[in-house]
Length: 120
Picture 1 (cartoon, rainbow, N blue to C red):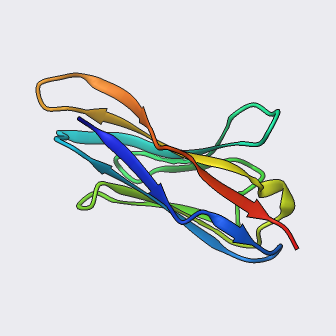
Picture 2 (picture 1 turned 30 degrees about the vertical axis):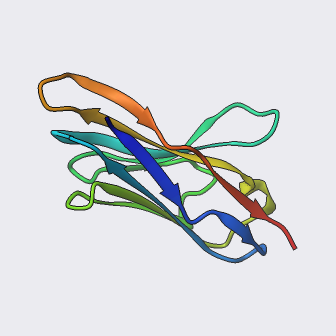
């Protein structure tokens, strides 16, 4: 089975920094695009950042310039470094990966979600 496990969430003051991690486990042939989404209470889930298998990146305008998404293919992991955090960044963050299992096609998987709270 394939599983995405997140870590690194927590409470941070405005202007602070946080690094989210997500690692895929299981028998995996390859991983295509990986990304981070977030959802605040009562709001729609939105894409924060994504990174393709050839390291092309895409960021939401609200985090562009203060966030960096990266991946470590050897570790089957994706990371989101967030700086200059604002209260509006408060949300549950979910990692996502499009994974090809050995002998199968590409399917999308989600992490369990990590709470990020930005407050003074």
